[in-house]
Image 1: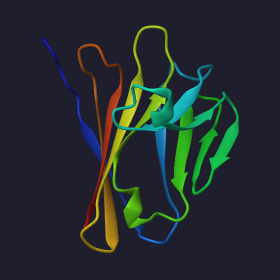
Image 2: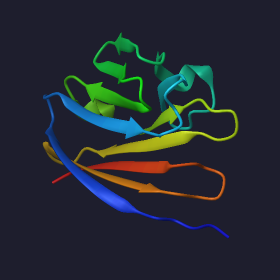
Image 3: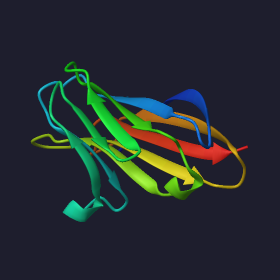
Image 4: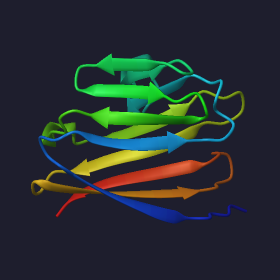
Length: 133
């Protein structure tokens, strides 16, 4: 059976401004992190990678690894063209920690909802949904 323990974190951001959020996993401090577009199953889907304790900038996207299992993802600036489903993931031996980022471009104001949970074969599954209100 599959259990889910969920909670939400709400963050607000605006089109044209810097928007950042954190991804974390307590067992990921020594693992490489990456950020990719759905379906995130090919190398060309990966938008940026970051080494433990490092920082990567790819155009408007940057990743910063804090060395303790936490890393940040920043869009600067956030644009309506960023409308996609994304994954923020940690390379692990058995499973992957993932954050899903979905942007729905209806209006200028963007609101983030992060939900974390435990699922059968995905460890520390995170969902980040951006809606424009």
